[in-house]
Amino acid sequence: MSEGIPASGRGALFIGGRWQPPERAEYAPVRDPSTGRVVGEAPIASADEARAAVDAAAGVEETWAGVPGHERARLLRATAARLEADRDVMARLIATEVGKPIADARVEADRAAGVFRLAAEEIRHLGGESYPADAYERPAGNEHRFLFSVRDPIGVVVAIGPFNFPLNLLCHKVAPALAAGNPVVAKPTSAAPFTALRLAEHLASAGLPAGAINVVVGPGATVGDALVEHPRTRLVTFTGSTEVGKAIGAKAGRNAKRVILEMGGMDPFVVLDDAPLDTTVAAAARGVFSYSGQVCTASKRFLVQDGIAERFARALAERARGLRVGPALEESTEVGPLIDDRAVERMETLVADARERQAKLLAGGARPPGRPEGSFYAPTVLDEVPEEARVLREEPFGPIAPIVRFSDVEDAVRVANATPYGLQAAVYTRDIARGFSLAKRIRAGGVHLNDPTNLRWDALPFGGVKESGLGREGLRYAMQEMTEVKLISVNYSG
Image (cartoon, rainbow, N blue to C red; front, top):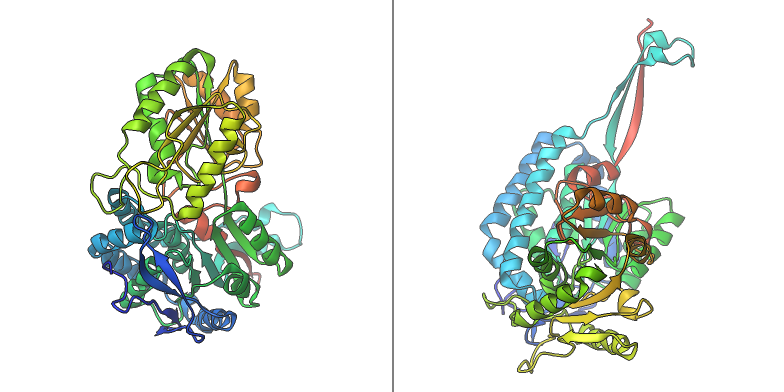
């Protein structure tokens, strides 16, 4: 067993400050994607246990909201310190559970600690405003009133995390919720539960009161629905597929609950004919092949102008062939496995569809030779991909770089905006004026000029438009979403 996985191999639920086995003794295997071997068992909660976790959080809603901000900040900083001390164990755990190359897993562990520190700092800025009452004609008597607003915690927050960043993306939900004075029920994916359970252990050891953080694991159809539909939950923050996110939003909306949905993307990487080839190709490879493309902000469509398309395609294919594919725990690995064999089969289907439509395969396109174990797929480059190909319309979530050639910028804008998604985009050009003009016309939550699509600043607003998301993450922005604005008036007329 890897470090961080219980010696028994079985995880436990964390409810109301207590570790407990699932009442029905149900467990699901957790497999190392690099080897296919079972490394532990995820505890599968019942709907009743999910509801019990919400009840535990609701039971401390008032007391946790009443903890002074400086004390909440101290507890968050203590958690960050524990995460920093546990960085290597956390990184190995991430690599083992989800197949993330160990170097990238260390970066995730570092960022997670930073998220808690940023959340602690933002508590000082979570305030309201004052208003000049006498500037308003009505109601009468405003010259004798003082008006101001405050931000109250919204209540119990449900945090539903994905497999691809099992620590950092969960921290982006848990840390701002706790900083804003809300208790949390977290539901990590059953494919990677141990990272979240270890995070709960650090939070409890840092001094967080019982009930302020709870962790349950299980299917969305039972555990997830119970959390979303419980009358005491007030906000659901979710990262995952658009299909699941829309279903969560519909259930939450029926009960007037707030949501933050970070969903799918088909992020375009636009290359204009004056782009510097070497730096653009290097960035493109990072954008599409980092963590085997299993990133919502991965570069998923390469829109390349005719004048540079041939050179770009050949250079990207050469770089793809040179990347080292291997097990996540090997230091030299650049591209690790996909999360499971079903993901590999999906890559095979998408590439086959593109080739049937006359796309040209320049690199990859199959499971790499010499890898009998694990869920590996070779970094793949497809050129001259027709717009009707599935790989340009369905989020691949894998190491596939489909190239679409275009002649003028109008064509690039049309193709970039031709999906229901709008998460992030990239534009490469030496002409910043052209880049700005194009960035303004691409419908996305973020556009990066001369940087790849998969950039994210933990403190800054992050989210998508259209079917890529609703609301914004980023510490200050998430905390605003997780609080209610209350107007207070004071009449001092005597």
